[in-house]
Amino acid sequence: QLQLVESGGGSVQAGGSLRLSCVASEFRGTMWAMGWFRQAPGKEREGVAAIDDLGATNYAWSVKGRFTISEDNASEDNAKLYLQMNDLKPEDTATYFCGLRSSVRFGGGPPLLAEKYTNWGQGTQVTVSS
Image (cartoon, rainbow, N blue to C red; front, side):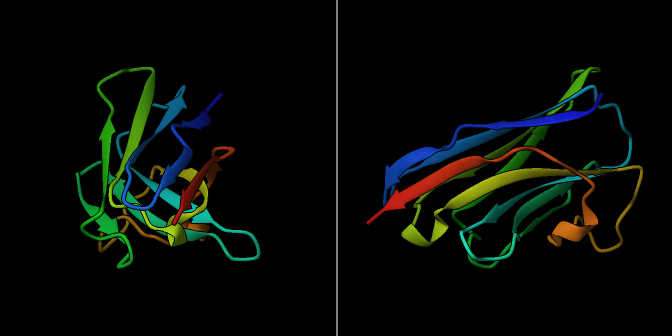
């Protein structure tokens, strides 16, 4: 059964770095999009970065130049998604979620709209202090 599990969150000071990981177990797909989303208390879930099986990427303006999304689907049994976060700011504080949508090709590249994704992990907390 497909399951997404995030890891790598933590507490850092402003200017620091973290690397988030997501493992999508039992996932085998040739057309897919995966993304990182975040949700702060009282706010809606927002897209941070996304990538698809063609290697196209999409970033929110607030993280461009600071965050890098990458993937590793070499395994036949699972897929791995990463988010390298540099120069972290207090406003990056949120719970970060990994999302997956398979068997679809999005025109214009992988979307940052959470409603486009159907499978989700439980999230990992990122806290950035000033």
